[in-house]
Image (cartoon, rainbow, N blue to C red; front, side):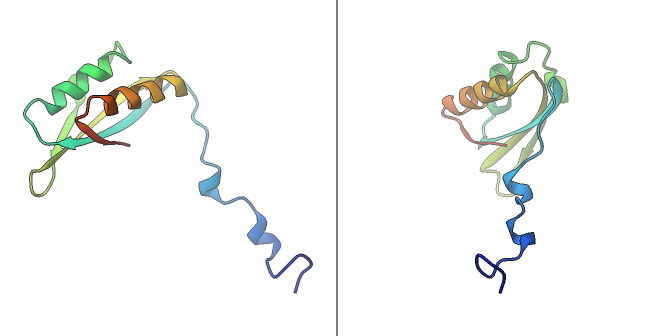
Length: 103
């Protein structure tokens, strides 16, 4: 047994998931927004996104229905300028009450 317990030096290295790669801003940043399916869900998401990225191109948005049609995911890309912008965007999307998850 090694000093300090039965863990090897390899076990003491930081795990990759504990140190995610840093993002270099500005960058194109993919966002996936999931909510209840509705005819205007994608439009509502795009309106929120435009408030955080004035150059946002809604023509490139993909809307994917869940297998049973109950949910929709809106996949888009924004020009991210910093962590504060991303946090504010995620918070505003959740504040709509229509968004279940932002990834």
